[in-house]
Image 1 (cartoon, rainbow, N blue to C red):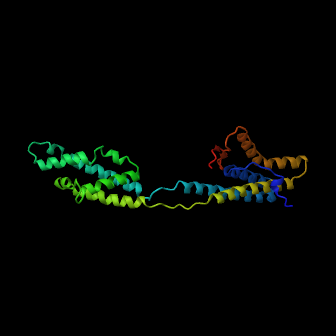
Image 2 (cartoon, rainbow, N blue to C red):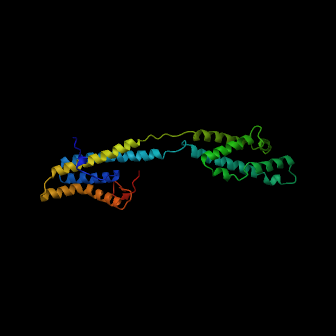
Image 3 (spheres, rainbow, N blue to C red):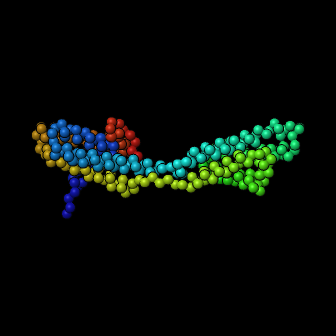
Length: 263
């Protein structure tokens, strides 16, 4: 039969921040009492909790990695500006197109573009999500170029440079949207193992303290209480949250301030 510390020492699962905060306090107390036998396992407990804390941070960072390439936002803004510039360039012909002296071809070209290029306004496109905007501009460009139904009007108003700029930005934007940045992070199995290691080291620390001060004389009781109080305090706090049927909270490992536990 294998005997484990968990058979005798039952602790609530310690979130990383609570473990770090308690470990730091136990280290300081053991140092003040000149108890290297306890300071060493307290340091190991701290290191394990710190490693788990760092793993959890890396795990959360990897989960919120960017969805697109790093230049996607820059190119989206550039595409927005290009669409706005093209829309304004069309609008610059409004007064001329409405003049009685203007040739009908120019007026027709203006009216066609004013009606068809952005029928719901340019902001209808610029406020779209990245993929939606890319798709919408992708539908518009063939109409403005080559044999498109709006290409003649673009040429009549000499707006080809605006269209060429839009096409170039649209191509670059599409390429950036296809990129999926990879931020390497730990697996949840690694997180689970790191959290389990915290519990193991916490129980070992408790066992060392109890083994060092096993008696009930005043000195042993006092020192045992001092050394275990940081862990006991966190256990009481966790028990209180469970009693109120709330999810266990964590604490800032530096200050002890209560924070939400991130799963």
